[in-house]
Length: 89
Image 1 (cartoon, rainbow, N blue to C red):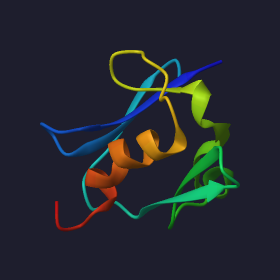
Image 2 (image 1 turned 135 degrees about the horizontal axis):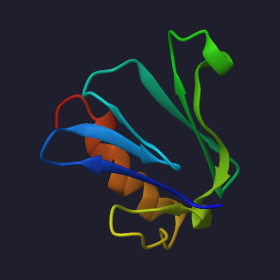
Image 3 (image 1 turned 180 degrees about the vertical axis):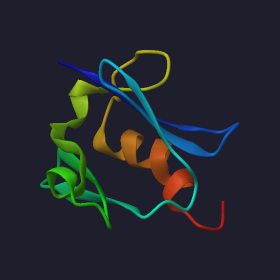
Image 4 (image 1 turned 30 degrees about the horizontal axis):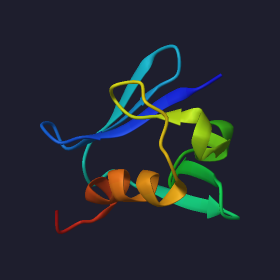
């Protein structure tokens, strides 16, 4: 099952759609971790439910942008999410 994960440039939120849309405001305590060269984990730093896991270890090819297109590479996924995780953006 693929999920949508993207940075909403208008609202500055991180958006996750996995059957239901979830939005995380800018400057939320969220971190991303890369596993190897092809997987991503997104976690809330100060959360107790599910150990804070927002997106479990997922191969980048199973993650889509807002238009439903799978990311072509891990670098493309990282570049797309950088504005959310870059506090200066």
